[in-house]
Length: 369
Ligand SMILES: Cc1ncc(COP(=O)(O)O)c(C=O)c1O
Image (cartoon, rainbow, N blue to C red; front, side, top):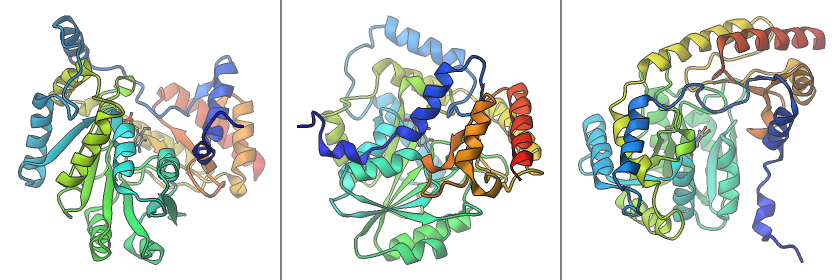
C-alpha cells in the first residue's frame, strides 16, 4: 500500500524541480529562472522584524492577524476603492491565501476558470481541493478577454481566477478588460479570486485592481515580491465577510497565523517606498524585450518580471534543454501551460546576466531556425 494519499497524484512538480536540480549541479549558471526580486529586504523592514523579536513579539497572534496591520490594510482598501470596513485576513503569503480561499469556496467537481498560461499553483491547488481546473487558452497575446472566457462557463463553474500583472507572461489587464470579465462573472454569479501579488510591478500604466468593482471578489495580495520578502511568508486577503470568515476558520486549524515578527515588519514595509527598485525593473523589461524581439515571437510584458517567448518552431523542450546545456537556466512553458511551445525568462537578474543570457538564447534560436 502506498504511504501517501491518492490526492498526491494530483500534484506534479516535476517540470520546475528538474530545472532547480540542474541549477544545483551547475557551476556558474546564468540563472534566469528565479521568481523573486534580486534585491534584499529594505533595512527599515529588517529593523522592524528584529525589534519585534527583541521586544518579545514571539507568540501566536490572533488567527486573522495583528489588529495594527489589519487596520492599516483595511484603511488602504477604503481609501483606494471606497470599500467601507472591509474584512481582512493576514495570511502566510499569497500561497497560503490561495489554498485557504480555494478550500473555503470550491466544492468537489466545481469548475475553476484559469487563464492559460497560469501560475503553477492554480492548477495543482484546484485539483487538490477536488475542483476541476478549466483552462482558457490566451495564446498568442496572453490576454484574458470576456470573449475568450465566455465559452468555458458551464453550470458547474464556480470560480474565476484572475492574475494581473501575471506570472509567467507579464500581461497586465486594462480597466476595460477587467470590467468586462467582472460583468461576465456577475452574470453567472461566479466568485472571483484575484491574485495581485505583482501590483507594484506595472510599467506602462497605473495598476488597476479587480477589487471594489464586483462584490463577490476576493483579493489576494502579498509582501513577497514588492519588498523582497519571499522567505518571510506574508500576504493578506480581503473580500466578502462570509468567505474571509471561512478562510479564517481554516487558518485556525492549519497555518494558525502568519509569523508574528513578520506581521510587525509588514507594517514598516507598507511605509517603505519601492518605486526606485520598480523603475529599475522597467528598464530591465525594456532591455530584455529589445534583446529578444529580433529572434523570437514575443509579447512585450507590461508588468511582473517575466517574459514568455515562443521557442523556435514551438519546440520548447529542445530549446530549453540546449539553453541549459549552455548554462542558461530558463523554465519550459509546459510548467505553466497546457501547451509546450514557450519558455519563461525571469529578468529579476543583473543586467550583465541578462545581456549574456539573451545573447546565448538568440544564438540558439538562430541555429534552430
Ligand atoms: C502569481 C503568483 N501568486 C502567488 C505567488 C506566491 O507568493 P507568496 O510568496 O506570497 O506565497 C507567486 C510567487 O511566485 C506568484 O507568482
